[in-house]
Image 1 (tube, helix red, strand yellow):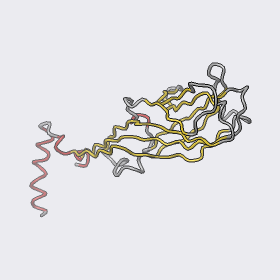
Image 2 (image 1 turned 90 degrees about the vertical axis):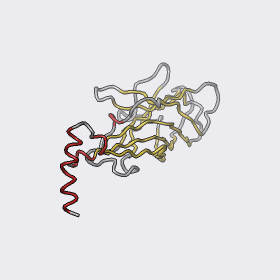
Image 3 (image 1 turned 180 degrees about the horizontal axis):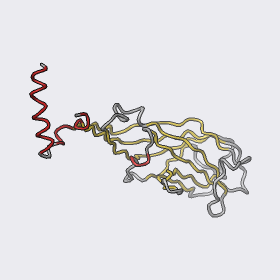
Image 4 (image 1 turned 30 degrees about the horizontal axis):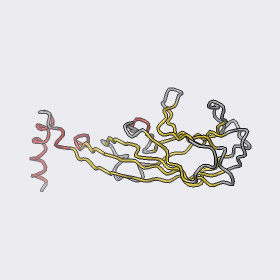
Length: 191
């Protein structure tokens, strides 16, 4: 067996040198991964400098930072020689609170590495009255989230806009995100 492997090594090296490196890779496609960040607390009555965001138009805003550990859901995701194409499929929020009618909108953001943020999903309330308990947030599925990953985790900020003149008490949100992932393992990096 060792002789066979030793004889195979020059052939693999020749294949790599001739540009056939793609023969030494494999892809794993995961069409959908769902990850829930349960019970994220938002307190618009007592916002602090660590959870109040800049106001949008006439609304006040509070936020929560969280992360989705995609690497823990996909085998070999954090291994050497692995690249990943991660896309957002959808984000949903299940809100719990006494009166949610003052909520005007929500955004899910990624830090862009330059001090700013990229909006990957958003929701705006369309009619007056109570907000539905389940909110489907429209996302950008064409955005490659790979560059935003850190150790297999996707850090996000969820911002909630609310009417400061309205009646809104503290509330929680279960924030569920679905991703598609294509992992490419380059075995040539192991040679």
